[in-house]
Length: 308
Ligand SMILES: [Fe+2]
Image (cartoon, rainbow, N blue to C red; front, side, top):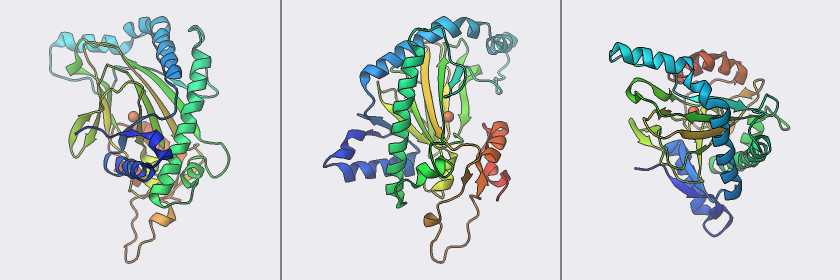
């Protein structure tokens, strides 16, 4: 079993209906799928690989070697116990937002990553329209929900991560298992260094590296908006002794003030008992809970968030 690979360019041709169905299946049965021919130029993706690798070498690698995580791992390895590090990730990460501080010392980093983010944001918006259509929602419904009602208010972030070689991969995860909190997540992962896995029917499956593909997964808020049709899915990154996995995840999330609830069109079914799995809530309240419970099951988060 492999995570579905979908040719996004086929949405514009004779195979549109089939492609819509493949994406519906990716959302309903997997929560993860890979897009090829997604419209982001290979030339731009090559530049993204170049600047992010240079950035890691120049501005991060030395810090990581001296980080508390490395020290913790060596301490635990010296003890020779089978105890695993459960509270940290073997990951170097920075987050790029429109208005935060960006790396300054890597040539062309800012221009390249700004261009990349604007292209990815457009792709995220296209995907929300595909989801609208597949779910039978009015065009623009999900985008509007993820923008807090009107305008261009979505919270669009890009995590630039590296998972350096780890001398004791059995003692620490690259990134502990979790579901994503937000809306649509678009991941540009390493061409060669694997490690990302998703949980499907109780089994961890590799999200196979596929050069220049964009991996899509849906977060907890898409699960709520779709009234559970599109479930957010557990995933994790394993650490490895070799390779330095690059992973650039962009998330198209609601602003903190947005109100999120299941789309009424998807809750009105005849003879159905009132289902309170997903309350109506303010996204910021959900994020306060997520900050504490990211690596725990999501269902208690839906129960804990203040309903409005
Ligand atoms: Fe994630």
